[in-house]
Image 1: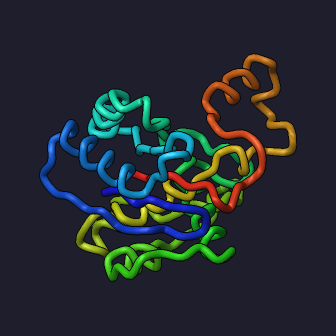
Image 2 (image 1 turned 45 degrees about the horizontal axis):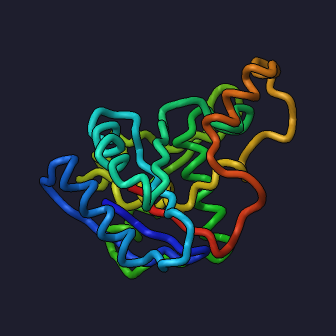
Image 3 (image 1 turned 180 degrees about the vertical axis):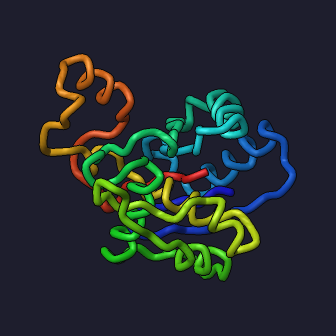
Amino acid sequence: MAIPRRGFKAIEVAAWNGLSEEKLAFEVMQVVRRHRHPREPKAAVKVDACGGIGIRVVHFLLAYSEEIEVIPVNVAERARLPNEFPLLRDQLWFALRDWLKAGGAIPEDSKLAAELTAPKFEFDMLQRRKVESKDHLRKRLKRSPDRADALALCVWEPAIFQPDYPDDDAGSDEADGEAARLDPYGGALDPYAGGIGV
């Protein structure tokens, strides 16, 4: 599954089934090449890398590093705004909601539309917003919400969602250096920027 984006427009939903990780990386590159203009900088390809399949896809995508910037995203790690969301997955879903509210446009795709409207959310014990688990979504949708997950990765701009207040357990220079190393983006949101969520 890959969804390319340019600014506030998601361009297409590219879906494949039963491909090896190497073939999937190849197909993702075909999507990149279809939509990237020759004089543009490298396309940002964000991959859900919290499982073995995603990590292997990242490995094969690295072979194309002259054309793309590969950005592994572990959605199971702690949120970048830990006072508001427990996990990065929760933060990505709410960032996607904000992107849509700000005028984000998606291709006509009934499965994507169903996946975007399916999740419920609740508050945890610390009053942080939490999205319904993927297992519960699978049971209700009768499939994995892969399209919506790819779109959430596609619109994710990590630098935009950094805390502007000190975090209780991350105030050291070492923590700041680690965040900078993991955060490939800098500056403000560029409405013409894009990327691909895989």
